[in-house]
Image (cartoon, rainbow, N blue to C red; front, side):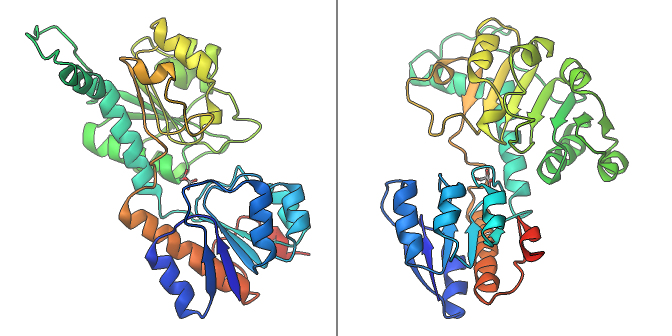
Length: 325
Ligand code: DGY
């Protein structure tokens, strides 16, 4: 049994594969495989480990229906045509839970960096502009007692809310389709409408999956509804916000600042105006990028592969319905 891996994944997962007697081919070049190349390699293997491979569409699964399992090195699966995988009998696995804390901490890092203008002030020093600072100059905002609005209060959003409650006694509002009763009990989270969340929150943090419903939900109208002192944070998917609307909201002072770990497209181009703005901070999608978290993700991936190749149910299935047929 052999696996194709489209990027270099941590030792922890590779070791588990080796111990299970599974051989692998790992693409180590710093080039991104296109869909045709991915199909070519997958055709010569029994399983596929995909770290952000694009083009996993209906045609991919029609051509690669021999795959016994596709293990995603991510929790997100918005780039995968899951229905097509199911139709072709291919189980898809992901890496839930293990990246909750690291991703929540990334949102926190963005919140504080934006709230205290930290990156902008760092750049000022680089430019030799650390002069006489007036006591009224370049001031940021405290978090203590402020309101956090979480769009998508799932596992990652709840982790962020918990930290914000414990650290700064922040009030927690959330907008979800369903209720999160645990969060309501644990830290007094309050479910509100999207409009109320926008108008009442000092920090709005997005943790929702990218779906047809959430695509572009942060548009000009949404930013207009936020407080002029409001901070927008997105660590979920870049497609949830409209980048031009965000740039315009920041330029016109409609909102106070923004911190992004995700952009649309990724990678963001060097000349993007957000990179030059005083009140914007952009990270290159580092939500899960700690040694510990990436190691754990590779463990989940290996466990999915091992189970899939044995013909067993994946421990972390994205499409459990594949077992119904
Ligand atoms: C995920 O796992 O989906 C995160 O966005 C990291 O890629």
